[in-house]
Image (cartoon, rainbow, N blue to C red; front, side, top):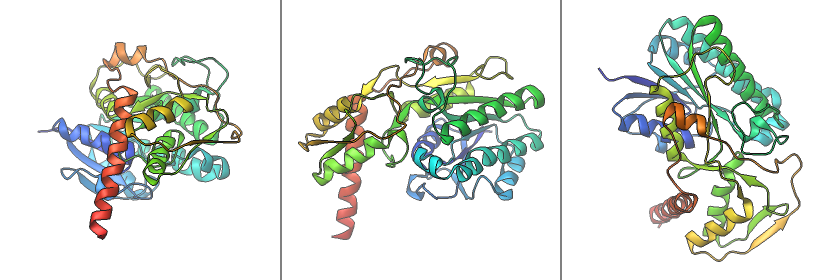
Length: 324
C-alpha cells in the first residue's frame, strides 16, 4: 500500500510543487485548500482535493480520520504586509489554524509526521550578519514571522509533551513557476509580469538589500526528504528545524539584471523610496539540511529565473489564445 500525505495549501504556489513531488514518488496525495489564494489548476490530477479552511472543524476531522503518514503544512496567511495591518487575522490563520491541525493529529493517535513550512529571513531578523544558522537568535520584524516562530515553539511542545513527530523547514525567498506576487519573494513574479508588459521594474531603496532566492522545485524536494528522513530527537526548538536556501545573498539589483538578461527584455529599472521595516540582508546557512537530510539546492538562480519567466510567458500566451 502506498504511503499517504496531506498537503495543506496544496493548490498554492509552493504547496502544489510539494504535491507534485509526492505524486511523482508514488504516494497517495490529499490536498486541503480553501482556494483563497490557491488555484485549482495547480492541483495534480492524481491528487484528491478537499476544499476547506485549516481553522475549521471539517479540516480537523480530515486530519483526525485520515490517519496520514505525513502532513506537509503549507496553508497560511503569507503576506507580511497584511500581517502588519491585521495581526489578529494573521494569528488566527497561522497560529490557531495550525493548532487546530496539530490537535487533530494528537487526537488521531496515528504516527503522522508533520512537516511545517516556516520562514528564514522573517524569523531571524536583521541583527546578526548572514548567513543565518538555525541557532541564530530569533527577532521577527512582523507578526508573520512572530506567528511562524510561535508555531515552532508549539511543535517543540507537541514533540516533548505529546510525542508528536514534527519538523520545521525555514525557507529563504522561494520563487518559481505558479508564483503569486505576494510575500517576500513575490518580486520575481512582479518583475516577470512587468517585463511581459514592457513596463519598468520598480526597485525600492538603493536595490542593494539582499535575499536568499531558492527555487520551488528544490523546496519541494526538501519537503519530501524532511518527510522521509531519520531525524534528530524531538522536543527542543531548533533541534528539528532546517534552513532551506542557497546561502547566497542576491541583491534586488542583481535579481533585476539577471531576470532582464534571461528574458531578453530591455525594460528600464526605476527606483522608489525604501520601505520601512524591510530587512537589509538575508541568507541562510544550509549545512544542517545537507548533513541530516541530504538536501542541497540544485537549481542556479539564472536557470530558475529563466524557468519562471517562461512559465509566465507561456501562461499569458495560453490566455491570449483562449480569448482570441
